[in-house]
Image (spheres, rainbow, N blue to C red):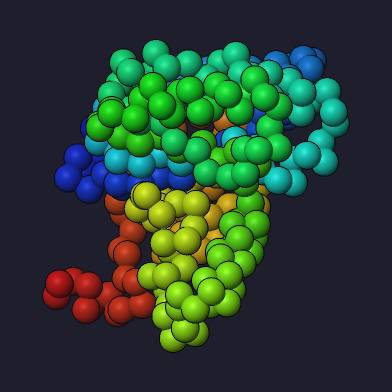
Length: 246
């Protein structure tokens, strides 16, 4: 927990997105089935959610299952869906006053998983300390394509003109229209890409990549990521001098 001493509590990123990578490799290196890594990864979600809420993060978005993940072995997909149904519990959210939301097309999920997601969202809707968002059957290209279809439909109906389509319009038609864009994107597991995740929303996010597999990414690792974020200057297209002058 040493790194928490370096944290500037007045500069905590208000919106953090995480690509939770490395569950399967974590398990395989221990001679375990890949599903064991996902089970341990779920336990770690509880840990990191609690710590983010404690630090004052307002939005935590976790990439749980992408549209491309349907290409994985059937047994692994089944195990992941079962984890959603069995391990998505209200208790962790209620304990930390966290509201649960999802982004993605959950209609394709098995009924028990879909039902549990909707129940958890309903049961936690009045919580206010932080919003925890799971990306389920989500991909950014799917999301942007859907937004374009919405725009075409509204234009055909005469509700908008081409001039009405601007950045604000697009943002309002994305799955994430209820939340702030990520200040910080963390990816565990050693890969250096963002894998079709929040492409529009991460236009000016700070990226933090680490080799640690997700099941081993604990509070001190989160603190290191936040400290790295705090050491950067966010310029948003301006010069460093302009930012310094405020």
